[in-house]
Amino acid sequence: MKKNSFLGGAVISTLGIVITKAIGLLYVIPFYAIIGTQGGALYSYAYSIYAIFLSLSNSGIPVAISKVVSEYNALGYHYTKERAYKISSLVLIGLGVFFCLVLMIFAPMIAKIILGDIQGGNTAEGVTLVIRIVATALLIVPIESVTQGYLQGQKFMLEPSMANVIEQIGRVAVILIGSYLMLDVFHLSLESAVGVAVFGATVGALVAYFYLLQRIHKNRKKLHRDEAPLEAEKKITNKDILKKVIFYALPFVIIDVLNSAYGMVDTMTVVNTMTDLGYNAHVTETSIGVIATWATKLNMIIASVALGMSTSLIPNLAASKAKKDYQDISHKINQALKALLFTTIPMAIGMSFLATPIWTIFYGYDALSIHIFQLYIFQTISFSFSTILINMVQSLSHPKLAMGTLLGSFLAKFLLNTPMMYLFHSIGIPAYYAPIATTFLTQSCVALFLLIKLKQYYHVHYFETVRVFAKTILTTGCMVASLLIIQLFVPTVRTGRFEAIGITALYTIIGGAVYFFFAYQGKLTLNVFGNNFFTSIMKRILPKKKTV
Image 1: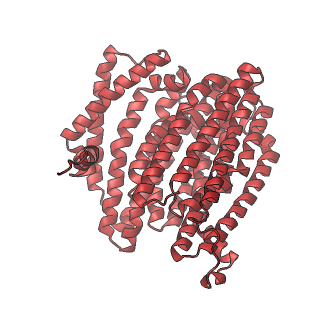
Image 2: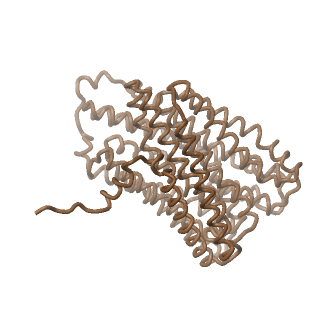
Image 3: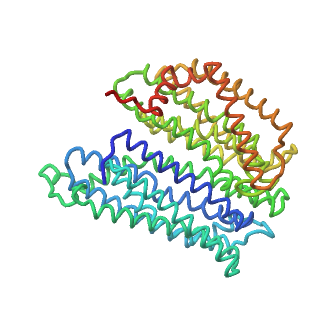
């Protein structure tokens, strides 16, 4: 094990995220082919409920333990650092067991709420089964996450990143092998196949946790695990440590829970409302499967890139706030916003344009799913901006503003989701578009409200960002025009998977080249990245000539 610098740690963590997301995206191609639309809906029911209970039992404390361990480590309080890790582990084990039991006991009730009066699709018994199986992951994932935080707090970034990759590989292996064996070899029920698939979360977390324990055991000396307490440490009580962990964790817990609850609102309302409006089981379960699971995975293509480009700017805001350098705060906020505009708008429009071949590559051709995805992809824009701005507000020490804004957004989503579905249906628009529009609307309101607040608090001026927005729209328009010309010769119609790959590659290469050409000619890249952007890239790519 080797400690990493800030830059080295950032690179390692980013690579780990990219690899993990890539595996998580690619496995859905064979998995969807194995379990189909109905199985996909069943899988999404279990995971959407699991996500919110995982947030309740897990989110925040791994981040908090990372901060606490880092602080104690810097002071040389190695004994107290170990106590903090043990206390946090016990807390998370307790929460994991509690919420696992809650899900086990109330799974039948949750299943009935999700399905309502739907006929001909998944059954309440099947949903109950998969929820109870995925609940077992709550016994392992929290303790594995806090162990990652323990190592990150001591600047060991490689091992947690490796653990994430190992966990994802283990989970995906169980999902694919298990579901295939259940259906195609043993010829068991769809519920059994999905049950084994969701159990992959437990297996993956267990393998990753044992990997981390092995690395910790092997590097006890480097981690200073056996040091005696200093005199100053003896005054620090377990209560003091627990208070500090909770104080750091609480804002992250609330925000993560509210983010997870966004998805749960769709899970709890879409099926019931669409059934009441007269949609059949196939349309209803296809809609919720796309909204809750399958389209979300594709959206991460954009969200990961956008967040990765902007997140590096966010930690620096805290330093600027400490210096009360409002000009620097304004500059960094605008830099993040411009980078998001430059990436999310063309990528979202491009993926919506290519919805048919992209969906065909991953899930096979399905007209209904493609139509939903064409609109759903635009949620990435509102999601990226609202998420980045919430993180900015938090890093500038306004956790109440961040939590209050997100809570208001969640309540709006909760209150508007069903009425919007009735409204869309009454004016002749399919009801399954309403949850997408509602999410986009509420997240956009979050972004707009926080932009106003940042302007009030730190005198942020958005003139340059507005210019970039206008140029991005014009440049994206040029890209779309080029795609429309290509479509005259190579239509994006229903094709096989291999043809869809070729079509997507062709459009992506030409569309991307046109976008960057006009972005460069219109000085959009200069406005976003500055004068030295391409120079610095070339210096990294081209090796320096050695002097004799």
